[in-house]
Image: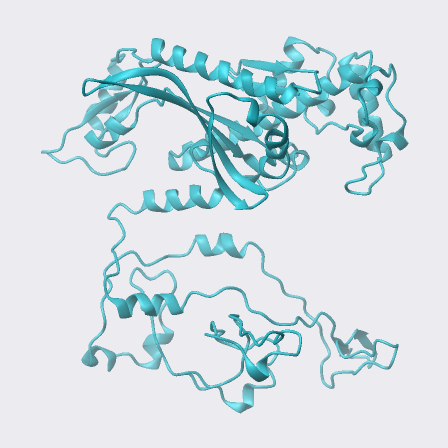
Length: 495
């Protein structure tokens, strides 16, 4: 088992390596506790640096008109504080009193990042090591009974006096899953990262393996997982055959290019057996992940001033970003009718059976495509008369698009009767999604018969049905005489 801990802005790292299959995980957790105690001691000793006041920093401080964190503007009566890095003493910016107090280093916190933590690494910890750690208090955020999004460990690291009493000082280790932020394989993520940003990975070549090519250094390694059935094979002095790289999980064989990549890595790492190859493969993996996640942290800090290691997933990070961008806060809905109106508008995706096949008649009279009504026994498909062209339309990143749209944050009120009279059809049609002031309409909707057929596959204005029961359910769905909540594409009048 291999682990890596970045040591600072110079990209230096410390590594953990254990080749004992019986206790490598418990050894890793013990090394984390040791590292946590070192981090706490180092932070306590070196996090009291005085502010370095340079002429340039002084000018930036004097010219600042808003807090460097919350962006709230300074007024004549507000206090502008010199905020500095307590490790280096360097000026960070002019901050308001509240942000200056909050922007302090957490001396007793250590984030630990795994890729696919919830699906793999956590299971190994729980089955073989967590119960062996004395004094550890464990709390989790579950996704389901078998998968946890995050795991928090607390243990006593010292004591402090408060109000005449001696209280325990706890240190927190937070395990998070990088896959909850970067939902892609490590292979794809390292392809997307420019080589110039792979500083931690590059040090592997400059410090220990000078023969490493960029193709090996900046690509996901290849390893025969299923070949490793016992520790004896680690003594193999040659790379296993290409057939030994078969992946039983994905039921895929090793391609010629992947095997050539493994052969090249074996030569350039200058290993003498499979054990050395495995350790190099693991270290390359975690260095690449460190570069990927550190680059993600850097971008997030530049864009929003938010550090992903203090969140468990992208939704939490993006929600915090949204809240930070709203300087005036969000108005609380205290009107029950208003709340109900918004709540009724919340729905999930529609429940329906897609039509995946359709057939058209080309201009030359020949049929193209396959109709959805084609006989499964090979009968003649139905040709749609007059349909001469097929156009496939799809939309990507729907959730991302929704996140870019405006949301209501305040100023909620009902329109009176006189104001409602001013809302003509032209005025309603003139509203835009980008308007600074938005309106929510609760309407009766007519669905004229002449558009029933043309919209039957995807009816307009889907709504969340209170309950679906009776004739709307087939025999299987109505088993047990239970009704269900769905968003069906129903063609009917709405009121």
